[in-house]
Amino acid sequence: MLLFLLPFLAAADGGVSDDAPAPLPEQVCPDVGLATMLSKQLLDQRGAQTLELKGLSGAEFQVRSFRSAGRVAVQLEFSGRTFLPSKAAKASLSGPNHQALRVVEVIEVAPAPEDGIARIIVEIEAQPREARGVYTLELQDAEGTKLLVLPGVRFPSI
Image (cartoon, rainbow, N blue to C red; front, side):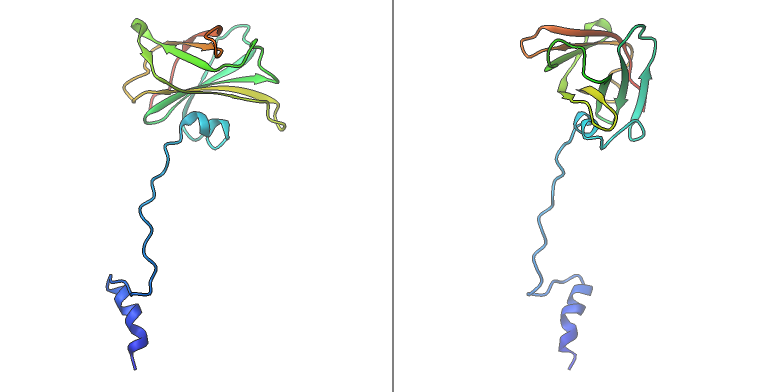
């Protein structure tokens, strides 16, 4: 008479009935970087520590830097299209004593219809103890031609 309760009792006891579906293997979340999240607007200055860099006299763009636990990113925002002669494909970030951090990704995002802002986002691997001090960001095209050299880049603390 109580046989219909056996599957429920087995599940409550931590057991699995024979007709229950097998659990899915543990899913691994892919490592999605800051640059991708910024370009897809899944992350903004409220979602990570951010620093708006001031004092770029005559600049035709705004610069923001971001930091997470294992990465930093620099986002250049242009009103309309970028003024660069070609597409930014490579970047380097050099700091005090000419140390270079590994650039993970460079993304150039076309102006969004709603705000008309074009973005170039550079993502760099950096542990919390790294990327301290003042850095110089250099953007290059696919052939390695310098497009922009931006001194005075700093990153927020976490």
